[in-house]
Amino acid sequence: MQRDSIDKIAKTPEDRMLLAKLWDKINGGIRKNIVGQTGFLSPRELEMAEFLFGDAPRLYAFGGYVDAERKMLVYLPDYLEKDYLLSEDSPVVCLEGSFFQGDALSHRDILGALMGAGISRETVGDICVEPGRCVFFVTQEMAPYILDNLSSAGRTALRLSRQDLNQVRLPQPVFEIIKDTLASLRLDSVVSSGFRIGRALAADYIRSGKTSLDGIPCEKPDKEVAEGAKISVRGLGKIRLAQIGGRTKKDRISVTIQKYV
Image 1 (cartoon, one colour):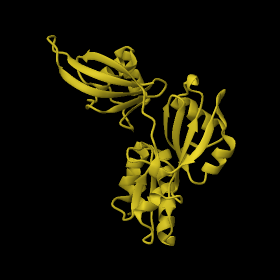
Image 2 (tube, one colour; image 1 turned 180 degrees about the horizontal axis):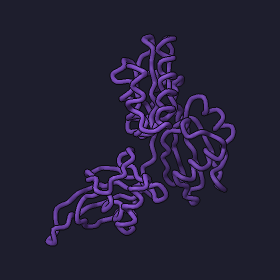
Image 3 (cartoon, helix red, strand yellow; image 1 turned 90 degrees about the vertical axis):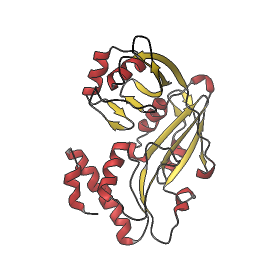
């Protein structure tokens, strides 16, 4: 682990500032032999951080549940076991919200309410929503403030409570199923089909840096998409290439795409 690796990994001044901040937080914990933690990181930020810290012992990526997209890096001193991450003292807290099912709140609604309450993005992890219920993950420090101050999302009343990380019941995502045939599995083709936009416009979204493939920004329209890959496009939403089928008589590829709603 070397701090001078930051300049080799960072691609922008913002990356450099982020990595320096992560370095200070984790190494502060290591030096003092206490828990050291970052805020929640996007998949790209986490990838950079893992390059920075390498195989550092007792360093864990944790977002509250196994398949979390946004995760913290947490250093645990040798007197704490890994199950500390699921305890009441964990740096990650799960909050559950219930609301009138007919209001059909979305991920964007919940995130907007949190940001509108002055809460920074790095203190909020994954947000999972289903009709009448949402589950989201926040830092231990921010949880009391949210419980005391967040009572609605837009005009919809929210009733919040803290949940045991060992007993989290995640909402099941709701999808619109899209079946189509594509000339290729290029990223612009999949985005075009999944969001029902022209391929040229899809390519523009990708080149402009608005698209992430499995959480990693991608600006290459011709990038091939694998089965199971998740694609997010800022301003449009999120899709998943759920299944790649066989070829049709016209030599096109049959696909099934799930669009998150």
